[in-house]
Image 1 (cartoon, helix red, strand yellow):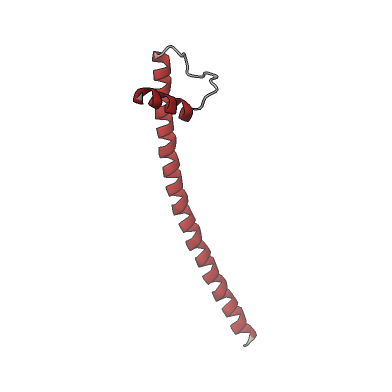
Image 2 (tube, rainbow, N blue to C red):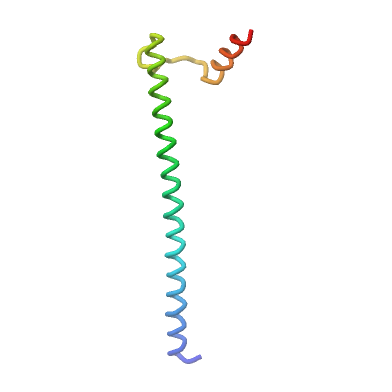
Length: 86
C-alpha cells in the first residue's frame, strides 16, 4: 500500500471512528435525559410525601416532624397493621 493510500485510509478510518463516537455520545445523552426525567419525578414524589408527612405530624402535634424516634417507618407500620387486625 502506498504512503498516500495509507494516509487516506487512516483519515477515512479516523473519521469513521469519530462518527461512531458521536453516535455513542448521542445515545448517552438520550439515556441521561431519561435518567434525569426519572430522577426529577422521584424527587417530586419524595417532596410531596415529605410535605404530607409533615402536615400529618403537625396535625398530630409533632411540630416539624423531625423527631428522634428509634423505630423505623416499616416497623411502626407493621405495629399499626397488627393493631388494626386484632
